[in-house]
Amino acid sequence: MERHESAARHPERFFRRARRWPFLFAAASLLVSALLLASTALFIARPGLAGAVLGPQQGQADPPQAQFAQPPAWALAPAQPKPGCRYFPETQHNLCAGFRAYWETYGGLLEFGFPLTEEFVDPVLGRTVQWFERARFEWHPGVIPARFDVLEGRVGAELLALGGAPPAPTPTPTLTIDLTPASDTNAVGTLHTVTATVLRNGSPAAGERVRFRVTGGGNPSPTSGSDVTNNAGQARFSFSNTLAATNTIEAWVDLDNDGTRDADEPMDTATKTWTGELSIDLTPASATNPVGTNHTVTAVVERNGTPVSGQRVRFRVTGGGNPSPTSGSDVTDNAGEATFTFTNTLAATNTIEAWIDFDNDGVRDADEPRDTATKEWVVSTPSALDAEPESATVVIGTQHTITATVTDQFGNPVANVRVRARVTGVNPQTLDCGTTGSNGTRTCQYTGDTPGVDQVEVWADLNNNSSREAGEPNDIVSVTWTVTGTLTLTPTSTGAGNVGDTTTDTTATVTVSGTTAGVPVVLVITDGTANGSFAACPADEDEIADTTSGGATNTFSTPIYACSGSAGTSFTVRAYHDVDNNGVRDPGEPQIGPTRTFSITS
Image 1 (cartoon, rainbow, N blue to C red):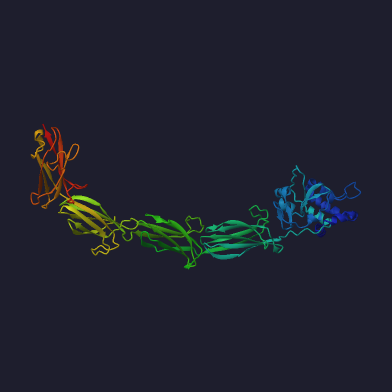
Image 2 (image 1 turned 45 degrees about the vertical axis):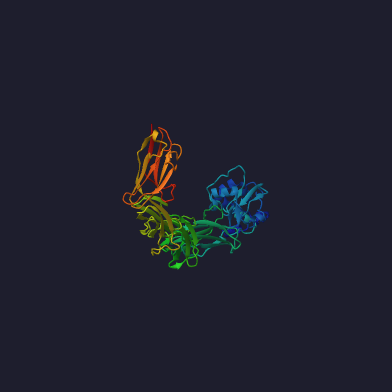
């Protein structure tokens, strides 16, 4: 047995000792007998090996010549990994293409052992071959080798040893991986990196694909990854966890680059414990601000009471009004603070939500800490007052209403503002209108007893001192106070024969009510085509101005003469309040009583 093992380590000597076959025949016969018993099927599958191992057969005077060539030195020498091949660091050889498929399909390491050479073309066989510990593969294109369910002897290793070749590499692992740190404790939300160091025979192994996988609790991200070792033999992987938990990191050298760890691929593990979940506090929790101003909220991020920097905090504003902007983000500074500023030009209430965006996707996930605050926006200092109506004609003795609306610079109504009014003109007085309501409005009311025009100044009395001062918004409106009354014509017709003389044809009488003061009035005479054709004679007037008598009766009367006209024609008479007492009727001056018609009959 010792001799058998020694021969297995020196296959090249087989080829030199063939010249001394008679001396070795007995020993070779014993070896061949054992091989025949253990590997009969192998020799059936590989007749070339049988001729090389069995020695002289019956009827043969000399040992048969070897049916294979000794592997060249380059095929025996350690090789570097080849793309697409499976590399065995134990023997430093590759297994590729069809040989690999056959090896993996029909038994693998247990059946054939590790590869002892690279592929090479055997000049004797004229085929591509590769030696293994227990077999030699031959490439026969188009022929699928038969499979024999027997454990093959270490034919390749033994034959190479008989030939005196250098001993085959001992199948012990030469590729190692070490994952550091082996264990560590990290704060949730931070980034942690592990380093895998790969060595080949104690030296850094560059270009090796290392894969990482994370298992355990919490919310680790990412859960897997890969890296290629650098010249120092190092590959790195970083991940985080947003929840307190313990994770296991597994790292292995993916020799066949299939993403799955095989039994022969070196592996190491490490553990990570995540502690101290982050908290966020948004201040101020509530506040009231004037509309149109800027307001800033501050989010403080801590871990167990200690500020945490470098955390992405996002803000979102909801609610009424016109908030701007409605969202934003900031990164916490060394004090753990992130800020957000916004405004609103309308009176409203807003809710501000702030959260730690662990995955920086702009969407708040269930595991991302959050806090909220509320902001109430109220109107600022009044900047404008609008009084309506701007002008009005009102009958004396009745109540007139002026509506004042107070707003800020953004047009928002301002409540609780004292409104006052000062009347100048025919009915002078000062009014305290009261304070505006939630809609920013307040009404001012007063009654005029004297016909004529009032100017009314309405203002926001911000300091409530009954006097308008600079900076207090105001508006001015006008009120025309007029009278009610009647207009009569006596008689309302005359015959055509009365036309053209100075005899009074009718008398127009204007009577006003509601005042004992004289009221200026104007009579306007109009025929069907033009004013004046029926004017009073001899003045030929189409407008007659005068003032009522005042007193209890308070009337004005004037005769009207029909200077021309024929039967069937007529003219009208209207009475107006001459508000500005200028003797003519101006646009907007109110009519007194109804319109009267005077007719000429036959």
